[in-house]
Length: 250
Image (cartoon, rainbow, N blue to C red; front, side):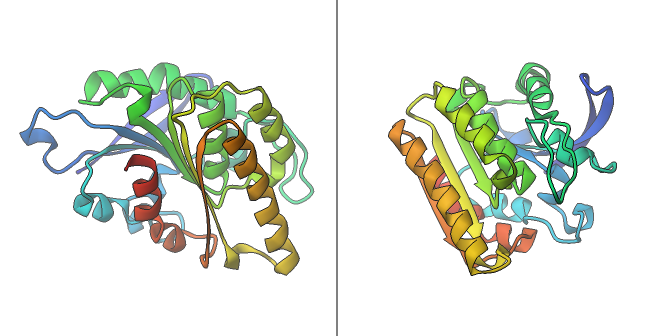
């Protein structure tokens, strides 16, 4: 069951659509459920809602998966460069993307202090960090990684698919060096071989991801790095649904 409703992101004074997945038996039971918060919520469930006409197919996947979840999909800002601004925690220049005005920390403060309490109050969640995860792809994958480091008191799991960490890898590494993460944290990161422009680009990205893997594992964090044959698109990320869900939750 998918519900759509609007919430105001108070630091931006902007309304945003939330795409909420509830298990099919939700209304017929009193069960409480773990929660995955996910970026780009419009791309998760229905092809007709997705930016490029193809979703992650998460609704169909979850309806047949053997563990039940609530998924809170947060739609991005579609205006101009605002998706990049909201899905990056750091203000920085970029030769291709232009100047990014990082609003990611403001966004996540809102998620933690306003959206999550609303979801926990209005739906039968298991609100503890052990039962709360975060996920996303591309810029959303970057934000999922940032979130699990910066807001580890609230999120114990992160699915970071095709993460755009290259634009701020040094800031993220500094964030990681300062973070105090619980050792029960689980992080999944992936990258598709067909995303790379050439072999050098692929090797460079794998090296960056491997450095993060080593840093997290040095903190006793359980980490999975999955190098796939995929592209940078929803059709490829859909193929990872079972892999990251099994790793994070089983």
